[in-house]
Image 1: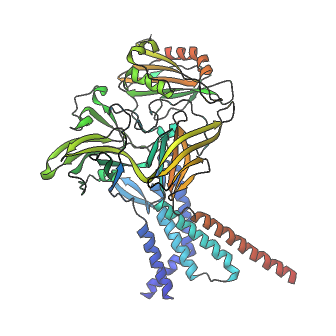
Image 2: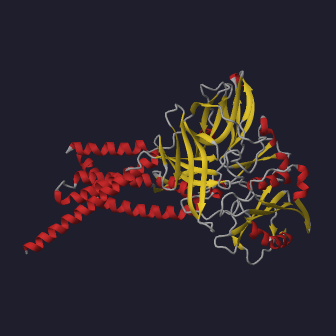
Length: 385
Length: 232
């Protein structure tokens, strides 16, 4: 047993493993870079790096074909930590090397935590518009809203993945169950009469779904495009009584309203929202250009930040490299639209943003110390000789 | 050194335990009532962002200003995948000084027409969508909205559109001049548009750019439109 343990540990502290892992990571990065043309940056990160294994779809079954970023990075981390514990000795002479490696460990852990914790949303504001939520770049949700109260909406937000799973959705706040009858990860909806083919039955029985056709589209992986999912959902009351079927799609702008159990409900498939206890109002968006050219000089959004409890109410100017940091979030100026009357802010939460800076600082100091120690030792030796 | 051995185990467990898929939990919350989006009806459009302040994706935006790499252009944000008409293409011949750009998922074709001043350019976007995309009035009003012009009603539509026949194609032409911009340095925009129904789809040819440049290119645009014909 002890022999097994020793060989197990020896494997993990081996320099050979380090070299093999580094070689594998080079191949992984190379393959991912090539595939980025097809998949775009998001999908490549998910497929190659934020996974234990790169999977290939063989006849509908995912088959692991190569170790993924988490696998290689995780083993490198273990290898590095284990080597420190077993092989390296804490001496002043090697303090620089130790610090450099410790910086590398912080860098690896930082990337892992960024992958796990970072959230990226966007906030679009027209001039004069106020919003208290940001929207996901990639994820969508089915919002089932109890709109009975004249002041407030009670929202049950169901992630798209739950519709994709097709499992029956039951929730304590809903007097009905939701069953996905069809799900399209990317689809367009069109009025059936516009398509000229009205012979096929409508996909749903209620509201606009009875007049629509769903046109499935191939998934897009391009960085500047997003998939617009659509689904047909059936609502089931007690004793499996069907309330009807609805088409929900991110292409449908307005929520679909119906009454049930004495309450007014709204159904809406939308970009996933992150509500905040404060709101932003766009006062003015400026897009300055150099005179006589179309070359941009400055992008800036003057916004009013107003918290629900009234503790904050101030104007903020957000411009390139000068984001608003508030409530653990960073609001960057990311884009503009509608003839410069709409601003697009990128809203990022990354609790581990500081780690790469610390890691680089540690590695820099470590390398400086190590080379300094060698230099001084060399100089001292020469003086002595 | 047994404690050293033990340190490896939590490291491995931590790595595995903290890595996982996105947590697809149902969330519930109460929010102050929101004013519904200003769309008149829930007619599906090629514009999933209507009411969200994003311009229609099926309409070419005015020639975008060159933006720094970190500043995604609005067309990037809005170019979501929508169905384009694929049943029978149109072909045309463009003047030599129009620079062709690669077609994309959204565009059947794009031409850039350079102006005389540095950085000045007009853009011709060719798009096609199934159906009539809301009809001529909606399409003209969408172009007007992009130029920040007030919408017109059906009675005024005939005075805005010029109808021409090119072979078997019935084409409606529109010319729109935007308001003088308040900011000095911003050009006044002019749009020349052509709406071409063909094979159950509607093709849009939209030339957008600074007033003087687009006016200069008007004859070339008309000649271009008259060169359109169904692909054999």
